[in-house]
Length: 510
Image (cartoon, helix red, strand yellow):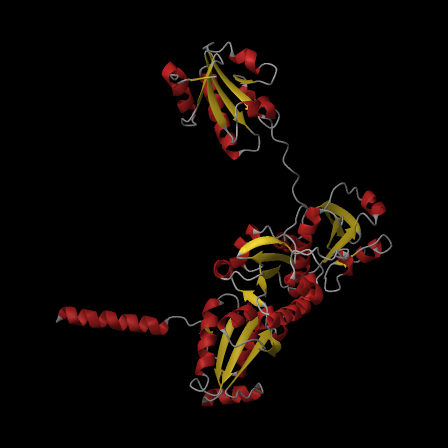
């Protein structure tokens, strides 16, 4: 009987806990003052107004699922205008659901009516970027474009569908992508009528699509890649218009029409970047307390990779109202300005305040650029250059040999342990102090030598001994025999090995 009572008690506790569990949808607002207070404290609110929970059951289900997914990103508010204590509030807000209405509030004010598809994924996308453009997959003009939502759906399609397919990898904020979308959509519709051809697209800004971006080394946008029989054939290099796309898909092996000259960055009207010239340089910067200027060259690969990050940062600063200016200057067109500010490589990013140069900044990723512009501070001076292993005071017992003395030295040593390394190699850096300590411990034995060879300086010598990774450690005896060292990498391991070197049976004749 006691066991039954205990079970009932635990069940009641579980039911109460389930009931009191925090819901992702807020539904406790009934007074206008509470509604206004919510808008003052929350800057991203999506409100679902319904005549009753029953009449909008399907919409409410989607709303609740989306709310769970965007916890912490925004606030999802439910107002049942059919309830007596909320009728007055709905009337005050001039909302008449039939049977539902969805409205978005941003930064304390009404922003817009929700105008996306009524699906969980669309609602999540909207709440993550309420001011963003309509997602391409929801645009009626792109209805015949096959949109891959993630890496899994893309790879699955490649395995199962062998039809010729052109995939446009893009990011939503890319100006050139936006310009191309209408032509791409029209081309997909025309090819659909011909049958057997697919134009697809994937938003590679989404975190879940990062593996695809890495797999195909996508660094600029848009990037178009052609697939046939489920395998990559080549990158599309033709013109970005409907006729060229259709012509290519019908005959991908034909020599493409030469692509027109890449438009100048300054010609992109959708860009938030201010493009400077020698005449406008000082006037544009003199009233800006915080301004970053990117000095670039159109042909520079690193500049091309930084451009979309710089664009993204400028857009984010505008949306989040972060003060400051992001500007760019083509140093090949304005060499006098580049020379004045001692620009010697591209891209070079310099910070100005009220027209005066302050310091250079090493930021190339959108998040880092935005973070810097929130609170511009001069970066600390770079650390002094790292000493080479040979220059370190405690490395006197290690022999640093070269092409001239390697052979003559090792011919005189009965036991020599040689570490082939590269200065930048992490595993080498960890091994160095242990190798040095072992050399110091055995310094009194003239038969033994600990040798280090820098393969970044002595590539020929390293190639002679088939060094393919770092560190590679080899044992030599009078340079007549050698053995790969596969032991541990502590000083104790090295000392034990050299105190009990391999027998002749273990050795390999050179």
